Image (cartoon, rainbow, N blue to C red; front, side, top):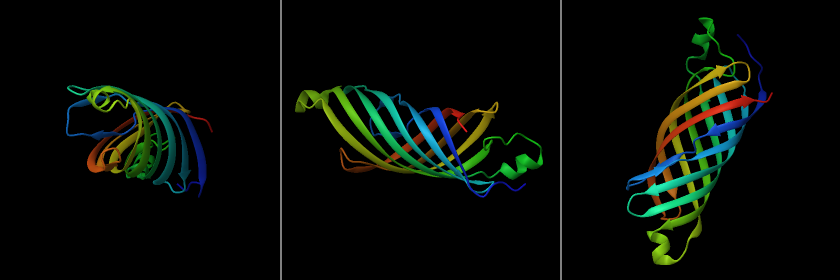
Length: 183
C-alpha cells in the first residue's frame, strides 16, 4: 500500500523518560519530561523524528548525596519499522506507525544541576551546568491507543560523552512515551 511521499506530523504532550548514562557508581535517576515530536514520514517503513524535550530528574547516589536537574534535550532519531508491511498484510492495526522498529538515536542534553552532595561540600558549588552528547542503537515498538493516543517504548545502548568529567561512558537508553497526535 503506497503512502504519501512526505508527511509532517506534530506530536505533543509526550511524557518521556529522558536517556540515562550508566555510571560506574550506584545511582538512581528518575527523569521525566514533556516533548514535541516533529516527524518526517517519507516511506512506509522509514521515519525520522526530531524531538526537543524539557524534563526534570532527581538523582540519588548512595554515598555522595542527591541532586535535582532541569534537563533540556534535543534528540534526532531515524527509525526502520521492520514489520510494518507484514502487519499491514495480516490486517493488523498500523495507525500512527504501529509496528516494531530498530533505530539510531543521537542527542544533546543540557542539565542545570542543583546539588546537595559531597561535591557541594568540598567545592562550595551547588549549581552548575552539564552537557551530554550521546548516540544509541535501539529496538522498540509503537502501538496506537485509539485514533490520537499512542504508546512508544524503546531500549538501547551506545556511547556518551559527559563534559563535566570529560569522559566517554556507556549509555543505557530506556524510553517510554505516551503521546497524543495533534494532527
